[in-house]
Amino acid sequence: MKISVVKNVLDSNNIVARKNREIFKEKGLIALNLISSPGSGKTTLLQKTIDRLNPAHKSAVIVGDLQTTRDAERLEPFAKEVIQINTGMSCHLYANQISESLGQITLKEIDFLFIENVGNMVCPGEFDLGENLKVVLLSLPEGDDKVAKYPTIFRAADIVLLTKIDLMGVLKFDLKRVMADLEKLNSSLKLIKISSESGEGMDEWLNWLKAQRKKSVGVQAKFIPE
Amino acid sequence: MHELSIAEALVEEALKAAEENGLFTVEEVEIEVGALKLIVPELIQDAFRQMVAGTIAEGAVLKINEIPGMGSCRNCKNDFELKINDYRCPICNQAEIKVTRGDAVYIKSVVGQKKDEEK
View 1 (tube, rainbow over the protein chains, first blue to last red):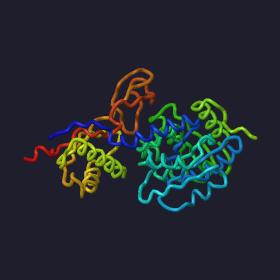
View 2 (view 1 turned 60 degrees about the vertical axis):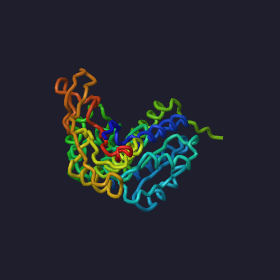
View 3 (view 1 turned 135 degrees about the vertical axis):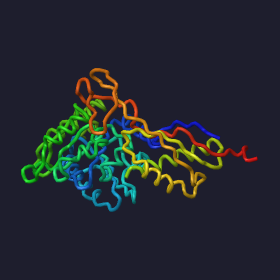
View 4 (view 1 turned 90 degrees about the vertical axis):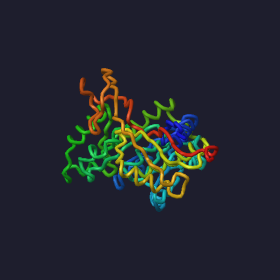
């Protein structure tokens, strides 16, 4: 017999993602999903970002890697709470891994939840984790052809961070090409040129983060110093 | 490479649907694949074959229907087919679009044998 189903194959994941999103709203925090290829500077950017958000805003990080707790160790001195997920052979995080991790975080004390996805420009774009915003990083050494090569993830991005911008001039990188390719996918997409090394673009990024949090949560910060 | 992740989710949903409907075998699963998902049919076929091995759907046929990616322009409300690398509206030239179709994979049907059909 033939059974009609008509169901999105990612339904199970999306249901959990929606629940996560409700929890973030209820607890008054904003969740950002950081997606990029390996080595684009996600962890270093998070170290600098969280350091600058402290002490007024408290941050937690859930970080996904196939193996090791190296990223968690690097983030621990900065974030209030860090959870490392080892995905084994899976090249992305699932919504239920986030949902399980949330139980280990004191959410009511957190303003920013950063989810550092497994380094990969393809699969993380498929799986909604319940995040409020997708942050896609593209580092200069990766080359100026990547937007056109990986259109799906750049199309899904809420903001693109062009990282390691301090290498402009050292590397051959055609910024106009990147801008033109992004323009074809989303005309109003925000792009910040940023360097964790030189600090360029950090103010703009932090202001954007705070504005997004205000927009989604409606308050400045929950943390009140004693 | 994402075909593996998608096939895994697909097989899980198909087996769930089979179980809910009392099927004890699955012979065919029909899916609708949106062009914007950039799925390579051969790769998802391979992944599907591997994922169903050892389940009641072992050996099942995966029928793939591809549909185009469609968008609606937020500026001029024009509906048009999206190109993979270019979402600009052919009328107003802005990429301010809402994807209306073709950015998901749906299971349409599952064919198998029901327990009371045995005899």
